[in-house]
Length: 387
Image (cartoon, rainbow, N blue to C red; front, side, top):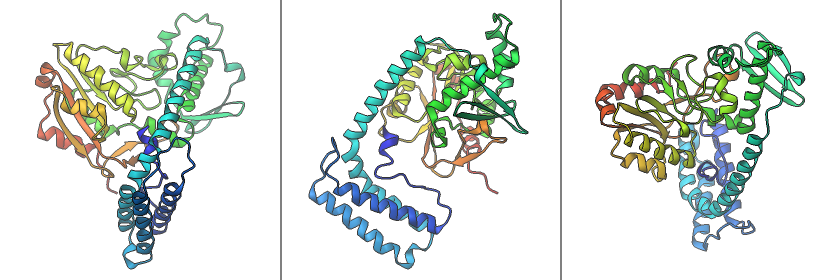
């Protein structure tokens, strides 16, 4: 819900190409503020009092006047003005729209739960007879009817060779291994594409860069991802990962849902989808795991720095919190959620600050302590690269 509210009254680009692009975004945001502030026809929305509406109109008018002055000559100055407008105007407008957004999210949750139940009770059908596969230089393209998807060559084949042949060991042999693999890959791509939609939804699949995993492995012996998928897991072989859809993901190395995963020892990385509900559930599950084990157990958690989010507050106040620090907005990177379709890893600067928390029991804290040197290496590994 927070992600939707953050885009009220308008989603704008925080990394404009140039001054013109930045200014266009500022003016579009200002126009959207006025339109929403004056709109009293939205069913379920709260009414803003006259003083608040007047403050929004005056702020927008001041912004328009400012945009015509020499002060609006740099991208940085325009983004600062946009940030001010998002605070002064966006706050009250998000409050106005919160009941509407909450209602929409609740309806979507019910619909998703219903569809998931149907999917669970509907046995998978063979799709290879309708599947068209086109191999290209660096990618493999799958299509069936109007559906299209592509994936970098060898991305999933390696995972299947390591795990899937064990899953499919009891197949009747009537279908070739190559056909089974293609069928499973296509089914996997369909599932994740149904969740992420077009490229705008792939931020849900954004991952930490390989440089961060290198430091986590060296300094904290992390070899397992609590939230990943066959499309974005970091390595092909070591400890493994948990993911959202066991039915499509297990043949590619998934250990199933993190919330069904109950390790008693080990060092893990947790970078959940950035929704408040998921972060809250993760915090509770990790707390229970740490409380129930006397063996060394550790979780390096990466979440957005939403200070009032219930899950984040729980983790910060937890006695298992052995150290926390911040990766500043626009100064650290994530890997593109569409990395599975790319020939090389592509990263983007995070628009939000990321909170890193080391949750450990006593034995885990002794075995993998957070030191200033380790913190510095971890921060540097996530930093925006210089060219």
